[in-house]
Length: 66
Length: 147
Image (cartoon, rainbow over all chains, first blue to last red; front, top):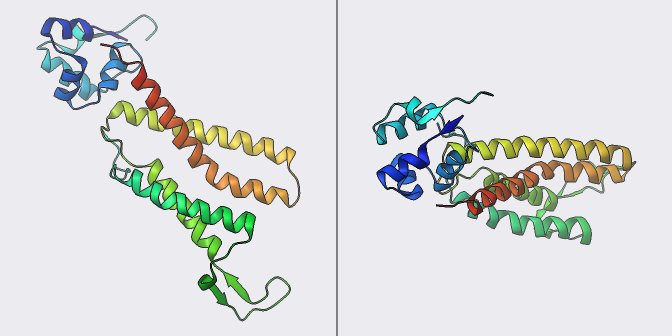
């Protein structure tokens, strides 16, 4: 699975730390998600989508091997 | 989302405070025949296995070591979340696996009375491996942060 969180952060001009605080996780977690090392739970994905005013599948998309 | 089976994060420090003295006591008992005198109890069963005195230094030490290690191992991180929880569970799985692989190897390499030592250490190594692995993985993830 890939995601566009880094892009969304740039659009909304917020840092990893800001985003982490807003959705109640550690900065490591945001970093791991952005670098595709960790797939977030549905709850976390929904929280991020809500924050960026987007649908979940605008931010997260399946890859061929998923 | 976050595991309820965790101690508050301050337990990591409390665990360390219990673990270190208990470990020193355990080493003193095991390798230097040290026993705390007031922990001796006279039993009525004097036979070839026992001189009628039971000293509880090792029981106290082992209880302290295990309690301390459990507190360190299962204390919540200051900022606990689902990713940390995943690292924790993977580390636990890794530790159990390594622990039993080493036990099998030791089973074939160590015999007779020395094997008692293997079993004694094996009681504690699973927690020790887990704690080490978990903290290495946490540190690794912290170091790769870029913004």
